[in-house]
Image (tube, rainbow, N blue to C red; front, side, top):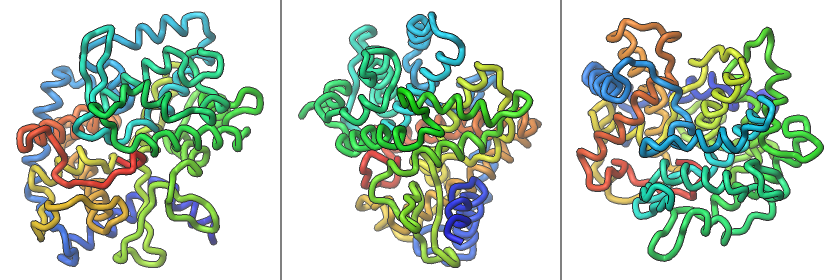
Length: 402
């Protein structure tokens, strides 16, 4: 039964089912915190489409993934990476790109409002996700995550990583504070341990995150690979790295939280960073010629941009204004409900957007609507409504969830 429950909680099906239960709970008027107003769906879809057309006039939208952030400020940094990897075989290149994506995504939790990365080559000062992406990209290219100073990542170096090295790479000091730096460091060190402890996924000799590409190639059939298979491998390989999480029979559940409205075990899975990472691993796999199937099996990402969009445009309303006054723990009922509503409402928004554009899920999968899209729209409306474009909900972050 235990194994069955763990397998279930690690599935996109469970994310939608459990979030769906909380969505129903809110719509039945039982929530102390929120109510939903689905009459706002058309307005929200129109806003998202407007942002999509502004960002991508031809609606040729790439996936919502870490690769977009590496070109922040319109700088073609990936050309630099491709030049560095030029002598490698296609498989070796894919492994290097897996290395980069995995480390960069794990370092991507909210940076806070005050941190900036000052990129010497371009003179750009970048904050938030873009800044974190460019900082980790530059560290990767300089060989900071490799025992041999190569543009790759290995378990040995990850386990030996120090807070001083991370602070140096991210230009952290008293004037430039980064939220959750010790949490980020622990994630890197635990990633190193996880890579060593799963040789079936990450290889026996020179274990590294990028070797996951070999495992996934072995799971492909007739040149096709299901997105859910990639997600499953990510959860299987990285579940042990998340700190202070709920466990079932000694197994770390990761981004899974409790809510009393959920029947039986009370558990609500989200796996936000793991899904974001999955989306980021799909492109190197496509570069190897694989066709990714079942993209829409994965869910939208329950983080503060998508969740903020739902609040700021009136899809989600609050019942008690006290909610705004202080930060909330990621484990709190109010945040679990907000995230669950976000998952389900992203499906509603996506369906409405497709209907208005007269497109199918194959033509416009959720991962493109997120990019085009809801994440950008969430940031845009936040900037219009609040100084600094902060989230409408304040969250106590340990640097490993949002």
